[in-house]
Image (cartoon, rainbow, N blue to C red):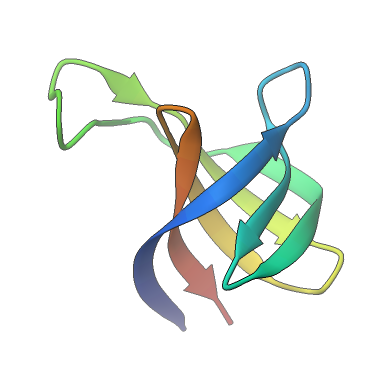
Length: 79
């Protein structure tokens, strides 16, 4: 099962550009594994692809993060 959130998050990145950690609901989550998901057009600029990542955190959260500008958006949380 999954739940759609689409909530903004603060994201810290590795030099490679992948998420290292993110802050959601006043709590930091440290990413232990991350895979690039399919690229979809941005809802603001349909011609620009945006990076999407499936991340697992050391706290056990599995989620999809979308990079947007300087921050990001937590899109889905998976059970």
